[in-house]
Image (tube, rainbow, N blue to C red; front, top):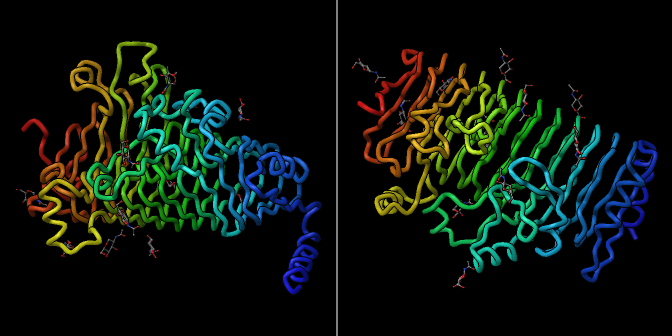
Length: 438
Ligand SMILES: *[C@@H]1O[C@H](CO)[C@@H](O)[C@H](O)[C@H]1NC(C)=O
Ligand SMILES: *[C@@H]1O[C@H](CO)[C@@H](O)[C@H](O)[C@H]1NC(C)=O
Ligand SMILES: *[C@@H]1O[C@H](CO)[C@@H](O)[C@H](O)[C@H]1NC(C)=O
Ligand SMILES: *[C@@H]1O[C@H](CO)[C@@H](O)[C@H](O)[C@H]1NC(C)=O
Ligand SMILES: *[C@@H]1O[C@H](CO)[C@@H](O)[C@H](O)[C@H]1NC(C)=O
Ligand SMILES: *[C@@H]1O[C@H](CO)[C@@H](O)[C@H](O)[C@H]1NC(C)=O
Ligand SMILES: *[C@@H]1O[C@H](CO)[C@@H](O)[C@H](O)[C@H]1NC(C)=O
Ligand SMILES: *[C@@H]1O[C@H](CO)[C@@H](O)[C@H](O)[C@H]1NC(C)=O
Ligand SMILES: *[C@@H]1O[C@H](CO)[C@@H](O)[C@H](O)[C@H]1NC(C)=O
Ligand SMILES: *[C@@H]1O[C@H](CO)[C@@H](O)[C@H](O)[C@H]1NC(C)=O
Ligand SMILES: *[C@@H]1O[C@H](CO)[C@@H](O)[C@H](O)[C@H]1NC(C)=O
């Protein structure tokens, strides 16, 4: 009774601000709510509010485009069906690294909020992978096992996504925590994709059972703040052509780090990542911390594994904390010695020979230039998985204006090793580097 009155009042107040309100009714009984959700976004595509306050089972691609000034109140749960046979051919193909998505949202001035959940229902996908060991093609798409991204904001501008939980992207593999921690590296997979968009802000997002948290591609002015991600690959990854990125106050558990790249994968392509500011990130069980990864060169003009050009410029990693397991030191030391649990394997890493053979990199070094990269107050402990290595900065051509201040990294055995190659500004680093060959 009261609830009815309350929602009536809320709607009355809201109605004043919107031309239309579409509250999506759930069908229940496991029936497909996808068509109703798509219809609501069509009906309420301008100056409107869309209310998703129930449990929705979705077995239809969500394609919600052409939105203009739309608020999406997601207080319920959108759960995709674990229907591999449907989703593999029908999830939307995104052209980059064969990624596909369950939900593609585009338009201008969109606000998604409300405390609700988007659930990738990944368990069936993990089980299928465990059984067949067929992970699909790199990056995702095949017609039989596509592993879609949970939500893609694409071809969009002026978007805010806040107070949302995302769980169980299909690409994550459900192995025991111990094995997980030991490997710190699983299949590709992504909860959030930002695709060809500008001015997109994420705040207070909780993610778990995912691989990559955010993959950002061909986008500008993206902000990610005050969020947590559990069990990931790259916590945030800046793919080709990301400019003006801000990442603050992030807690990443079990990941490959905050990554610029991978870049330079496709011969003849120009990849640019510039003006990235990352501050206050805690990494646990991570393989890498602040990372830049670039493919080597290639003699093949059609190469899809190196040979691209471009540049990385004006990147700041500030207040990065890595390591420190939630375990007593003695236990983590024993486990480290047994090489079972990684903290941060390589807290600072730049690699211009990513996924490329050493021989190929020697003959065809990467032509992508790296400059103006600043590490400020990067602290913590490496796992020991890379011996005493804590810093690994290896450039193909000379990297310009790389600086480090406030670095305080230790290796488990106390003896930290810093490696640098082709860094023009070694005297701007607050540690003494050695060349990898010396
Ligand atoms: C995408 O999939 C096709 C077909 O399976 C494959 O040939 C291609 O190498 C894949 N591309 C990438 C970048 O993974
Ligand atoms: C996104 O925009 C590009 C053009 O910029 C277009 O080719 C593509 O089809 C759009 N993607 C979707 C899913 O609408
Ligand atoms: C970015 O998007 C937000 C939300 O729509 C808007 O309030 C803000 O004015 C936009 N910023 C710019 C620079 O357009
Ligand atoms: C994976 O498959 C094997 C063999 O069928 C089974 O023993 C194991 O429990 C499965 N693991 C998971 C995590 O489902
Ligand atoms: C962090 O990740 C580890 C390894 O997957 C897991 O065991 C642990 O529960 C996670 N910590 C939190 C607080 O979620
Ligand atoms: C740093 O980020 C953490 C979340 O990882 C947050 O709890 C903390 O308040 C942030 N610190 C500052 C100074 O904003
Ligand atoms: C990135 O931007 C550059 C310069 O505008 C352009 O030449 C290149 O094609 C873009 N690359 C991608 C992958 O979009
Ligand atoms: C460097 O990047 C930061 C963060 O995006 C930006 O505020 C600043 O203006 C950039 N500096 C230059 C010289 O472009
Ligand atoms: C780095 O950390 C030190 C000690 O916590 C602090 O005094 C200093 O202001 C920090 N520097 C920056 C640039 O944040
Ligand atoms: C480096 O970190 C260690 C461990 O947290 C701390 O005891 C030490 O005082 C720090 N050193 C500096 C120079 O800040
Ligand atoms: C680097 O090495 C020089 C010469 O051995 C030494 O004087 C200096 O204290 C070292 N600096 C650091 C940060 O360890």
